Amino acid sequence: MNAPHDSLATWQDIDRKHHIHPFTDQKALRDAGTRIMQKGEGVWLWDSEGNRFLDGMAGLWCVNIGYGRAELVEAASTQMSELAYYNCFFGTSTPAATRLAALLAEVTPQGLTQSFFTNSGSEANDTVLRLARHYWAIRGKEKKAIFISRRNAYHGSSIAAASLGGMAWMHSQGGLPIPDIAHIGQPYVFGEAGGEDPAAFGRRVAQELEEKIRELGPHRVAAFIAEPVQGSGGVIVPPASYWPEIKRICDEHEILLVADEVICGFGRTGKWFGSDYYGLKPDMMSMAKGISSGYLPIGAVMMTDEIANTLVSGGFLSHGFTYSGHPVACAVAVRNIEILRDERIVERVETVAAPRFAEAWGGLADHPLVGEARTIGLLGAIELVADKAARRRFAPDRKAGLILREAGLRHGVIVRSIGDTVVASPPLIISDGEIDELSKRVGMALDDAATSLSN
Image (tube, rainbow, N blue to C red; front, side, top):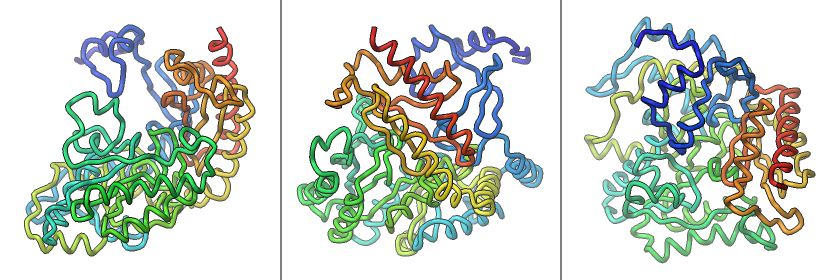
């Protein structure tokens, strides 16, 4: 189709006829029509009608160094001109893939030295599942095949990754979860602790892992997988007591600890990885999103030498993707990580942006609709409530979170609603003034939502 699409109506008509969207009410979208995004610069986006939005979600938690970085365009162009594609099968590699593998070994937590490349976070978590089971099988422990995850966790949308996730509404489609995946509770203080002391709550929820391991049998459990901070679950920040207890349990029962760093990785928490923030030493780590700032699709699984060398000892590995280690994606990821490192963007998040964000976002807690406003690094969440004192939620059919999200768009700010939790995850290069502007616009959206919900 070569005709120019120069009107919103034309784009929307084509979209209705030919495009099924991810994670979308298809009928509602076709009735309303799509918004067409056309341009991005820094933390700002423009749609086809010229409306400007402060992107409080960095795309989908991923545009860490912001839109419009010419260095990444140049990296892609240079690599495409030299070698647009070759695979990593048949005993081959490319300079870009080897450079990225070496760079990841430098920036990831100590002990994670070897990588396997994928094209997304979902594929990375599928890979974790397969490689961990294969690892135990090589060691003569074939029965260690069960993965334990958390309810309300998100680990991707492919069959294995969605099964690892603990979202019942996702499991309701496609016959999920697959066998040998179990789930325990989440460390969601606001939503589930009640009046319990947060530290005690964190330890108690962590101990559900030990109870589940004993129920299933340690000889059958391969790994525990979790995000350091649950992103798509609603920016659920665990109490400080949670992760030390999880680590103790995994070590005691010879269970692999897998950190899903797809959202938390590459500076989001103010450390290079959420595992750094919490002092974890995971056995395996999945990553995507911020590895290329979303400019091209790429993911990876990092693992320890012990796991990698065991896999090597097993001979032929029957796993991989046509685009594993795609040279253009790898070249862009290398340049992206170099920018994060050389411009000290992660350090600025920790010392400047995160404190400013905590102050500005925390100010939203005074609003009558907000039961809690919390942040960690450049991740933020507000909990919408009908009764602030009692922390009572709105009835689900009121769709308070969606009302706030739509009000945000009218005020030129993009945030995300996860039920009645509204979350933000702006580009890491956001300025102090833009942080203030983000919170100001969300505050105006809260006022609009309050009016709508009072009717």
